[in-house]
Image 1 (cartoon, rainbow, N blue to C red):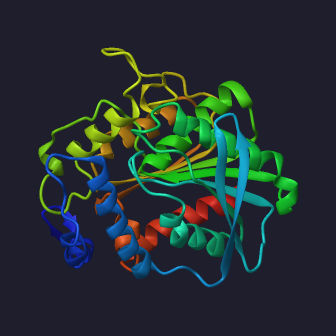
Image 2: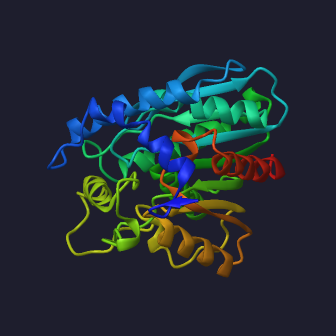
Length: 316
C-alpha cells in the first residue's frame, strides 16, 4: 500500500520522527549551521532507534595527509571472517554528518559481512569545497589499501550512501585514472551524482520527501563554489558528468522511486552497463531517501540491506 506514492510502512516511520524534527525545524532560508543542528538532532534520534551492534568495536586512526590529519574510524566485528576491508564513505549532502553519525550503520556492515569497515571523516563543505572532501576520501582509500595486511586482508571494497555514494563513485573514477588501487567492487546506495539538480519534479513533492531539490541545490552550491561559473564541473566532482565509465569495478547501485536521485541513479546504472561494467541494480518501490535507516525494521528496508550484503559477499 502506498501513501502519496510512498510505501505505507515507510510513511508511518517518517511520521514517528516528527517529535524529533520539531526540536529543530528546517530553517527558511536554508543556513548551514541551522541545517547541521537539525541533522545532529535527527541523527541522534535515528542512531538510538537503529542501535549500535554490540558485536563490533571501533578504534580511531589518524593519518597524515598534505592537508593535515585525517581521522578514520575502524569497525571490527567480534569475528572477522573475510579477507576484505569495506572502505565506507558517509553521507550528509557533502555539508554535514561525521563518522559518529554512522556508528550504527558501520557496525551493522561489520557484523553482517564479517569484514573490517573503515569509515573516513572527510572535510565538509562549504568550509572545504571540492576537491577537499574527495582528496580526503582518496587519502583514506590509499592508506586502507596500503595497510590491508594489518587487517589480515587482501582486498578492498568501496561503499557509501547518498553524498557518500557520490564520493565513492568519484573516488572509483579517480582511482581508475590515477592511483589504480585494485578495488574489488563499489557499492553505491542511492548516490548523489548529478550537480544539475534535476528538479523541481511533481513526482517528488509532499511531506514524505526526505531530501528535496532545495536542499540538494544548497548542498551542490556549497560543494562546487570554487568552480568557474557557467562551466561543467569535473567528473570527479559530479560523476554523472562522466562520459567514459569503462574499467570501473563491479557495481551495486540502488535507488528509491520517491527519491529525487531516482533518475540520475538509474541513468548511471544504465551507463555503467553500456560501458561493460557488471552491475547489480535495485529499485525500491515507494522508498524515499534514507528509508533503509529511518525505517530499518520494515520489510522493504530489510530486503535492501540483504541485497547489499549479498552483493558484498560475492566480492569478499
